[in-house]
Every structure is written in C-alpha cells, then in structure tokens.
Image (cartoon, rainbow, N blue to C red):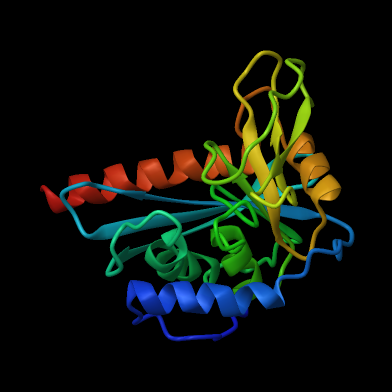
Length: 231
C-alpha cells in the first residue's frame, strides 16, 4: 500500500498538537466512498512493562465479512501515552502493518476517534489522511463531546455535540440494550454513511467485526511474540 509522508514523527507533544490543528483543515467530510469490496479493521496492543507496540490490520470482504488478508508489525513505541495524541504513539506501528498489505481496502474502521476529538483530529482522521482512504472512527468510549442517550434498540443513534453545538459524531447502539459505540468521520466519508457502514459491519457483537477481528489478531500476536521472547 502507498502511504503518504506528511510530516516527521519525532515531535514533542506541543508540536504534535500544533500539527493536528494544521492537518484538520485537510480532512474531507464529504462522502467519497465508492463500491466497497474490502473493509479493514485496525488495532494495536501493548504490554505495560514493554515499549513494544503490536499492530494488526484485518481485511475482510464486503458484505460477506470473511477475512481475506491480515498484516502485522511490531515497533518500539517512542511517543508517550497522552490522551488526544494517540495517533503519534500508535500510527508508526500501524503504518508498518498497512504497508505490508497486498490489497488496498476501500474502507477502514479504526478503534479510536475521528472528528470526535478536542481538536477534531483523532487517529482515524490522521490515518485516513496518510492512506488517502475513507476512514471511520469507531471508539468504545467517549473522548469528547456530549449526547443524549440513544434509543435502546439496535441502530439507535444520538448525535454527539461539541461545546458550540456542532455535530462531531454519534453514539450508536450496535445491539439492543448495549452500551453505544462512538462513530465519527475519519476521512472521505460523511457521518450518515459512517453510521450505516458501522452497523453493516456488525455480526451481533457490540464492536464492528473488522475492528473486533483486528483486536483478536493483535492479541494473539502479542502473546506469541511474548512467548518467543521468554523462551
């Protein structure tokens, strides 16, 4: 896969915040999604006592949601864990995994925020810009914004608002009477389409199947590499 080079990764937290404020102007919030044959989920895993980050990308067919390709990478994480700056810690290892794919996904789901971020530039926006692909942020918890409780049924939606009452995402129930996930635009997609594909990628679980499988994949990778290290 082709990955754009937009900036260096050796940044201070102050520089990283300034970069987010510049790059947010390049996020495309109109739907540019064409036919979706392949949808990818991305996730990383870490150990508290290790600097290593384990990244995994799982590419699935659409609409069948069968796994057609996986790619992984292990990289030492150099940026500290700082809420709102997750991309600068995790993207270097995620990009290593994406670079190994032989198929280019038509859509990417990221376990993290997109526009639902204090500077409207979460990891899903950052990854979408670097890959120049439609991307959705599908986070398991809320980082920023406020919302009413969505209806308790599956597909219940409540918009997520910032301090100026702008819509920055949505709380979406992917199962009846289950905690919502937080869906927001990453890049080259609009919010209604992002919600629709998030729901379409479900298989009866709270988390969409591409990111769910990516989570399992990196968990196995982390365990296997840990076992090899301890031999």
